[in-house]
Image (cartoon, rainbow, N blue to C red; front, side, top):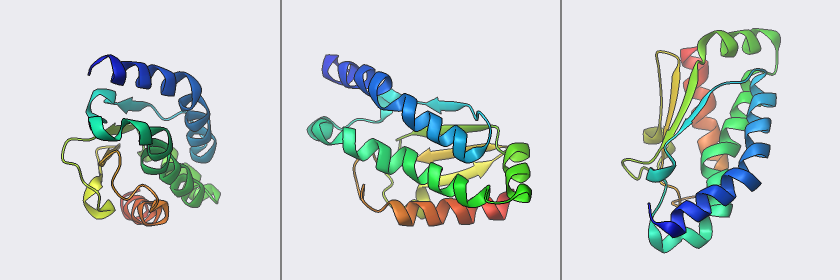
Length: 136
């Protein structure tokens, strides 16, 4: 990461990330560890779009999916017992949610392009809910 990316990451982590993390914790009902590989979440030509795309791609689908799963006590318990960590990265530039999410050994992996199909939050949420419901 260069200076531009480091500056953006620091600003995002200080200004937007705390609220997004709080929303994830509230939706899940517990403080699930987030392992974010910030250095993989960049494509230089799109840096100006990340303030809008990061929440839509990486965080808001988690909030919505966790709210859906944890809507009752059974879901809250299953999520708390099974989900140990969320790992966010971009290694394959996936933009199709079916290929971008995996759940194994308590780790929910989000490996998604930081920009492609940013506005398609609903599709990502549906895939996450289905993946978690089938694996919790």
